[in-house]
Length: 289
View 1 (cartoon, rainbow, N blue to C red):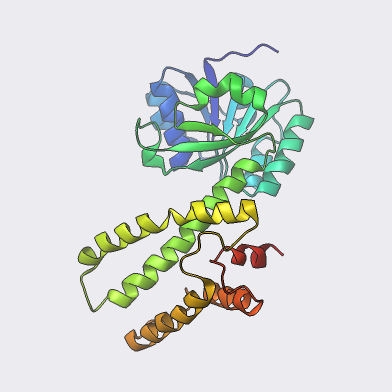
View 2 (tube, helix red, strand yellow):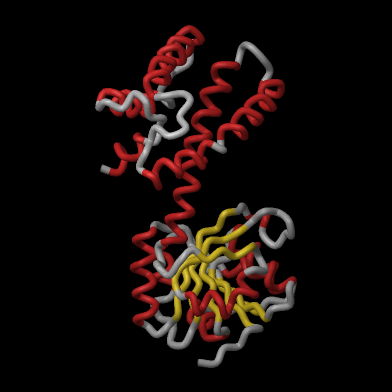
């Protein structure tokens, strides 16, 4: 199968799709763009892009087709009439692992090679060297290898396996950890609201959380070995006892404990199951059983 590596079509010109298309334009790629609201394409056309009248026309224009739409249903609608035979379809629309696997089967059934992507960046980071932006990709390793140079232009490209759902799963796992961290930060700021200025407290919070993230290595080691007690300094019995102080302090300060209590309840369950010498790794078992 021959492929033209200078031409790229981008479907979806929201904040992220527009930034990605702009990065390829700046790198010298012949970029065809399409958006349901056609006026979104005008700034990119002014920068050298070619606007396609329909999604099918955009697909026909290039061997590499990148889709960045609202959701999986939008992908199906946009590509319903497109001829995907012989195309390299890269779907960086946010979705679930299950949706990615279903879309991969749908695309390959129509003759395309398929990669799914999870974007670990916000639009202002795209196309900016050193910004830290990257995209998880999963699906066709052959496609990833052949198109890696182009895929690496808007953001660094990280391949995470031939299971098409792997990129979305990595994406959501990291975002889920971030969500939990934000919950802890919100509770901490609420406690300190009347005691110190947020600006004074923030450096302490950053320093503390930065030190704590290293505990992920210990949790990983526990999960790999099956020994959840190895290297534990603050065991579950101690932490559950300490949680009472956290809750009493929240009550004294007039702060709701609702962001903390779900995790604390799991810790109590694990302790009640007879694991006082573990750290918190056993909570993973409670979540996955």
